[in-house]
Image: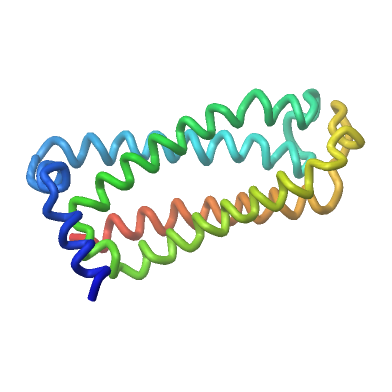
Length: 165
């Protein structure tokens, strides 16, 4: 099967071998991955709680998103890089781990939810972005989905870590 060969090739690269065999490298990469995920989920949660109308009501939704989302993207890039490094160290096992597969599905769902919100949800943001204004149901729905999906991503990620040994 082509995928299996690709996974085996990835796992046999010098970088993947170094990550897998070095007693210090994997824990450091994992630590940076966890810290990056904390920043991703933390910054997204700040925006989601504003969209739900329960926090940061003294700042406009648009300004809050403009201030926070750049940090989210940097943290997400670090999480993606460190996650890819960890994946490469044992690609054949990660690829067949059901919790890891579910985590990837949830990451795609998080991306789709964000894309739909940014395409449709922010169209009328000027109407409800003023400090103290309450967001519409669509924004609250997107925020609720986002929070639930990211909590699930974190849970599945931790579960993956505990099932790989």
